[in-house]
Image (cartoon, rainbow, N blue to C red):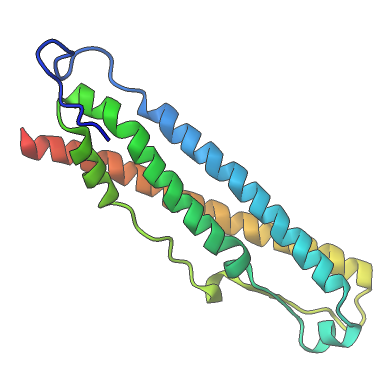
Length: 182
């Protein structure tokens, strides 16, 4: 990445309108939402197809465990880290130009804020049991509804919130970096 330190013939720090970071944040979160929707649908479809092949006694006695962590959280953790780093690469040059500092230093500062998404399998996997007298159709409808709700709640309360906090933390670290270097 080229160093974008402003020179006298270019824009002086603080001149001109500030960069529209919110648009980059919005685009990042929209991309994450789209990836989440694809992974959530894949989890739902795979789980529904698998539960249809299970025997009645297994659903009643052992129940059905859906490995949401492996099927949903792990791919989204990779996607969220990738999108966060892409945000840094996109937002650092215009911010550096506006603030009058090095884009490379902002990228390094931003990368220092990136944290792993840590949701253990014990908090994300879900277990369903069919009642002895529960009809198959009712069980499948409840299974699918509860699975969708669980995945949606995990995404909204844990994954998307994590990425939002990351992006906010990065922009705050850039402001602190500029304050300490000036």
